[in-house]
Image 1 (cartoon, rainbow, N blue to C red):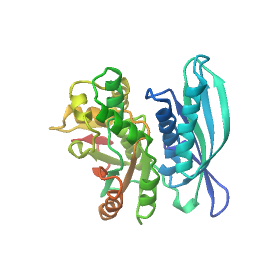
Image 2: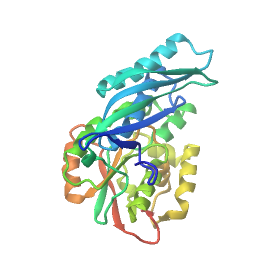
Image 3: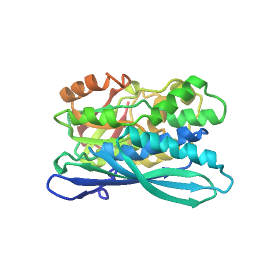
Length: 305
């Protein structure tokens, strides 16, 4: 499992009651603070296990360091990652370090799930709605921070969102009886991951721009044209399969394409179950929202209004 439909991780069935989930993710710093970088990179890697219905168990550090990087900076990166692993109940059992021209950090993670409880990014059914568990806009805000155009409150909200584990959201999803599809929203943005869910499920997904939960200042910055290059690549990726409906706001469309780091879960499920899920989510993630609906397959796999 994992190749045919761009699933978040691979799954290997061990017994009738245990399957192992394997995933790996690492990247260059998206923030300037090394401790935050470690936290965010670890949360991002752990998220794939949660997206497939599992719980992380063991991980290995992956670290690339240039010769000029201080030992103190390296220590802070690893401490940030370790803190997130501990929070997830996951043991970091070792890892591998190489010298490189720029720093990179992440985790190779193994988790476990019952084979009957695996969540996939396909299976969305007409009549479902889509629930998103984190606000969008981290790509826009981190781009703005580099240009000195976002304030401290936007920075703090973006950092906190990226460093937050999807553990509680995943637990809430597991407690709902009918979940048809699930993925996490990362580098391809909400547009790209919705398209993968729609095409793999043989349906059309309609996203509602006005319903998107957004981080503070994200819409204002996007409206100013502060949009990362990855968002344009994501738009190009889905363009042949996307129909933008009359009245759609450009800034909201840009934010739907915004590449996310350690983004939220995107869950397809019947509306009644979605209301139950939102009640659980709002206890700790009040920004969680229904952001779209699943329609019978039409001319376009993806619509945005």
